[in-house]
Every structure is written in structure tokens, then in C-alpha cells.
Length: 497
Image (cartoon, rainbow, N blue to C red; front, side, top):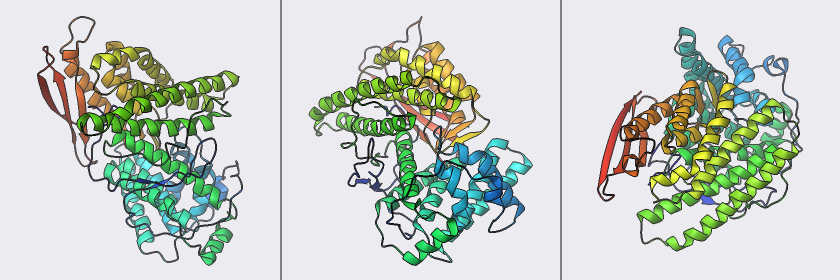
């Protein structure tokens, strides 16, 4: 069976992640983190037991963040300036993050691993935007140098590592490897961060007080860690949509329920939709496993599907009420609302499409596919060149539309949007998706007769194996049933980049 959103397929993502106790936060729990594969290379630092005050809303000015640096290397300063002007506003996706706006640069003043990871990410992002020019190649080489320095600071630290510094560095490593195209490493860093967040360590009071006095974050430390839990939970969902072997367990799926209460803001809607998406992804994995292994208890699927369908309907209602109550949204809020709509449409398609059903069943979702293209068109029109975020946006939705919508106009509109944007969402990369979608469309359209695309012309069981950046191709495997409905044609395609 297709896994719908998934492009990559890897088998080396490590041990399955275990669930831990929810912290019962409302409206959605962010402390339901889990352990992943063993954390290789990340050493635990001190952990604060103080509850933080709310994060301040003001951002750090260039004078505040760039006048006092561990060094005055011009390349480092240039990379930090690029990070501050561009990267920190894109890395968390459509929803602003005060963690990146306010605290990461300050933390880099006292945490060498954070400093070098920040300069590496800023420099690599500059390379991603600039293309293959001499200055951008220099930026890429400098980014690798800084990346290696950050790793060295974690492996051989000159002073005890702080927990926050290690977690922030780990998160930025996942972004660095996503930008490099090293998907396996990006997933490993995500799993390591989730594992580290789930552990409890004794507090080193001396190191904790040193960080507090140096960095000026006496009560926000716990709040910042909570924000990191949120960002790693988003990485967890992103990985589950890409890697067919990844199981999304950051949020306890049984404790976060969608209830018909008014949503207070778009941020709350984003939290709840993330929890719901995580549950849907787990259900789809189970559904596919039951089809492939008849010994599994498939009888539990209908009530689970019914419950998730009700929760999708409930969320749709309260989300629409929120939008109706929001009389005037600013441009940023409009973009946030549109990306939430796109993700909700995809969640609805996934939970209302039973695995094992004929491909023609996707025709029932034509209005949703059309809405995905419409909302994504608005988002693409506002895109800066070379956009990079380490969060899920609209790329998986456009991929799904291009592959599963058989209306020629709509699927080709989705393809055109993928071609027109130079965008990365973690490991999802627009131009690679465009190549895959274009080839799959060509395979199916060759069998079209008239307006309708017969079941015998449609491909299913799509598996796309995308290697790391040094690989110059992808391997696409899919099946297609012939006219009698019994004989299955196996299709294998190599797509060169």
C-alpha cells in the first residue's frame, strides 16, 4: 500500500520510540515526549528545576547580538548576520518562535557548540539561497567547518555542557543535515533530541548558575526547554511523513483529544492539529500493517477510524469558528491560517481513505485537492527565494495532490507550484518532489482515454527511495492493475536529478 505522504524509505532509523507520561498541559500536551534511538554523541548537561516565566516578545537587535562575540572572524560575523536577518525567521516555519527570535543568539555567546552550529546554519542557508556561485561555495565550505567545530565542542567540551545548549545544537544539526540533503543523519539528530528531552538528570547547580548569570535567562530556562519540546515534536511529525519506518510518538495520542471548545488563537490550533496529525499517521501505519499481516487484529481499526474522523470533523468546526471570529488577520496570520487549512485537508484525505480501496476512490476528494492547490498558490506567491524551514508546511500536500489527484488540470497545477518554488521543509525538497511527481503523472497519463483515468491506468503502492545528497537519483517502484483487475504490473523507474 502507499503511505500517501511518504517519499523516503529507510530501515536504519533505530529503535522504536517509547511513550512516557503526559504532563496534562492544556489544550494540547507538549511534554508527551518519547525516547528514540540511542543518543550518540550528545552528553546530558544540567537541567533546571525552576519553572520559567513567559518568554518576552521583544527580539534581539543586531547591536545586542553581534557586538559581543566569541571571536571577530569576518566569516563568522557574516554567517551570524545572515542567521539573524533570514534563517531565524524561517527555521520554525510559518509560526513565529521566540526561542529563535530572542534566545539562540544569546545562548551562543556562552555555549560554543551553539555558536558554531548557528554560524554553520546561517552560512549553509546562504549557500542554499545563492546557488552555485564562488561566494556561495565558500559559504558551504565554511558551514562544514563550523559544523565540525560544533561536533567537537559536544564530544570534547572545555566546560560542562548545559542541557539547553546541547538540545539547541542537536536541533540545528537536524536542520543542517536536512539542508545538506543528509536525510538519515537529520532523522538521527531528531531522534537523539527526543531521547535527550525525555531523560531526567541531576542538576549541576554551579554550571546552571554560571549559564544563568552569563546568558541572562534566570527563569526562562524551563520555558525554553518546553519550546524545544514543541520544535522536536514537529520534527517527529515531519519525519513520519517522509520515512515509512518512522513511528510518530512525541505526543501521547490517547491523552490529547479534540473537543468542541473555542480555539483561542492560531497557535493553539496549530498545536491541536499537530497532535491530530500525529495520531492519524500512527493509525495509517497500523492500517497498512493489518493489510500486510493478516494475523493482526484488523477489527480494532473501524472504531479507531471512526473516532479520528469525528475528531477531524470537530477540529474543522472549531477552526472555522476561530477564523470567523477573527475579523481582521495580519498577513502573517493569513499565511498561518492557510497552511493549517492545507494540512487539515491532507489529514482529512488520509483518514477518510481506507487503505486497500481502489485508486478511483481518490476522485471523491477532488474539492479538497482543488483547495490545497488554491491555498498553496497564495503561500508560494509570498515565498522568498530559497526558503528553508525545519517544520512542515505545504510540500507534502502538493506531493499528495500531484500523485493522487487524477484531474489533469489540478495535478499539473500542483506540479507547477512545486517547480516554481525553491523550498525545503526539513527533508522535503520542492524540486526533487517535482521530478518524482512529473514522472508518475507521465506514467499514468499515457494510459488515459478521454476525460476519465481508468483504474487500470492508475499506479498504487508507490515507494520512492531517495538517497542522501551525494546520490544523483531516486528509485520509484509502484504497481498497476491490468484490465482484468487480477494481474498486477510492477513498475520501476530511475529518476536522475
